[in-house]
Structures are given as structure tokens and as C-alpha cells.
Length: 68
Image 1 (cartoon, rainbow, N blue to C red):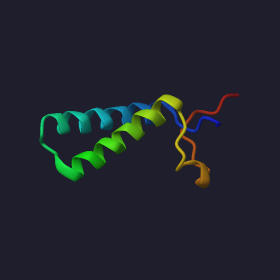
Image 2: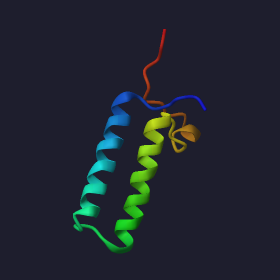
Image 3: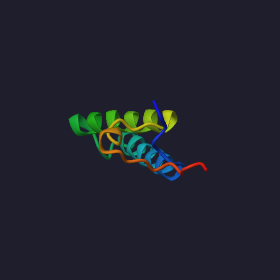
Image 4: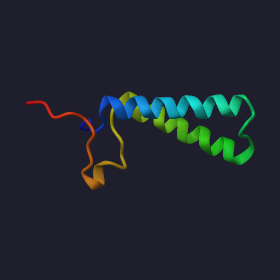
């Protein structure tokens, strides 16, 4: 897998995941919606750590900086 996520993209995803987890454990969101959002948060964290987003690949999107 070739990296296709830049540092800003990774930070934004981690912040979104942290907010979702906080809202879930604070019981602001719950039920099925809460569980679905927790799964998305898990995917965001995973893709941030591996620096690869599978949805970017088919469209040729890359947010990482090009190295010269």
C-alpha cells in the first residue's frame, strides 16, 4: 500500500474519532447511531495510523506531500 494521506488529514481524522468517542462515552450519542459512529471512529484511527485511505485509491486522491 502506497501512502496517500498527509499529516493534516491524519490529525483531522484523529480529532474526529476522539470527539465521537467522547460523545459516545458521555452518552450524548447512543444506540445504533452511537455504535455506527464508533465503528467509523475506529476506521478513522486505523487509516490514520497506516496512512492509507482505501476510498482515496480508486479516485487517485492523495493528501501527502510529494517528495522531490
